[in-house]
Length: 265
Image (cartoon, rainbow, N blue to C red; front, side, top):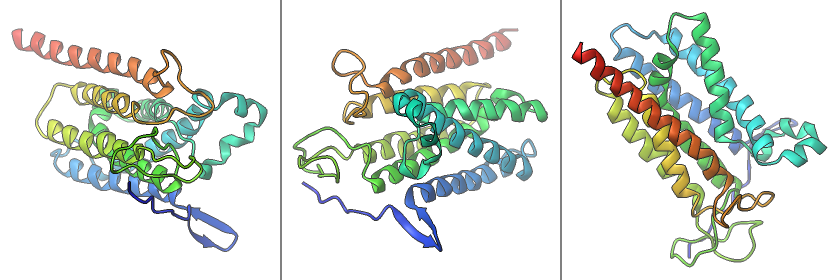
């Protein structure tokens, strides 16, 4: 069994304001996405500019924060949200939903496309390989917060988390850091390095994330206020990944079907 390195969730204080590690991880994620986006723009031979990258990161950040927090309250903590709507502003306590954040980003990017001469999938194909880095830093934030811990286990790398009882558990935050973050980033970065039909990168992101998240949820303790949704094993995270997987497969199929049709003509 490994020792969980207990962290102070507050990184530092600026007068009366406390800066939390969880929030800093989001900032790091957006900064890395900006750096990678800048690199991709330079490789695009004029298709993308630095100003466009900065605008996309800004729109995405707004979508992640608003959609992620609202999605968590709706999908995972709706009764408490009804009793105290101000909980939605307490982001330093954790509680961000990826699926809500994804919907928020898609809406914000749709608004971006309306104002700029870019198609929706042109934008999502560009930004999709950048997203896993933000997911990775977010999972590190979860680990530092000692939240979203795994199920009880006797594997040698199990940890006892604060506020999770005395039994050793899977460090599921680190599993998600690797699968949803590092591994998915490598797959998407290499896949997008070659010219692909439009929508293919976006479709692969949806499929890859859905598979990675669904698998990691098998080791993660379901949210206490929800428990298992069905079959004594299905979690809310897995349930939300099912339509994501199906939509991703449909997008991939349509992307390559269109390329085949164009090639035959």
